[in-house]
Image 1 (tube, rainbow, N blue to C red):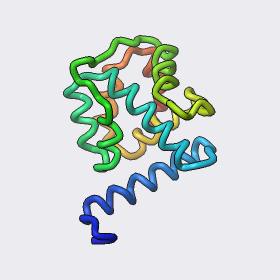
Image 2: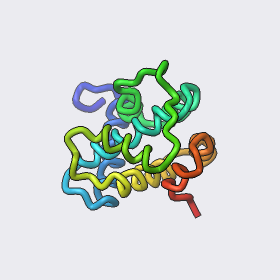
Image 3: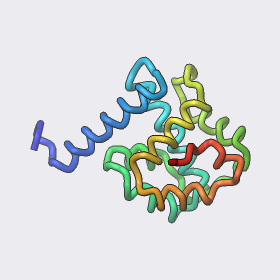
Image 4: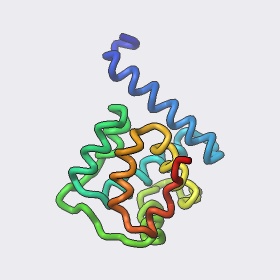
Length: 144
C-alpha cells in the first residue's frame, strides 16, 4: 500500500495517470489538465447519450478513478439524451469542456474514443457505439 492508500486505489491512480498521459501525447496537449478536460467532456457526452444499463456496463471496465469521473454529476433519470448528429455530440462535448475552450473538440472526441477502443473490451465498445446514431458513430475510429 503506497502513501497510506489501498492498493486498488494506487493502481487506479497509476492507470489513470497513464491514460491521461497517452491522451495528452496523442492530442498533443500541453498539460495533463487539458487531457483530463478532454476525457471528462467526451465521457460525459457519451454517458448522457447511452442507456443507464449501458453506462453501468461501460463503467465496470474503467479504473476506479475513471469510473468516478464518468459518473460525476450524472442524472440517470435524464438519460439517454437524444442528440443525433455528430455536430450535436461535439457541441455537447464543447459545453462539457468547462475551462478548456482551447480544446479542438473533434480531435478530442476522436482521441478519447480511440483510447477507449484500445483499452476496453472490443465487444463492450461495439455494444456502446451501436447505441449511437450513425452520424455520431462516424466519430469513433474503428480498430483495424
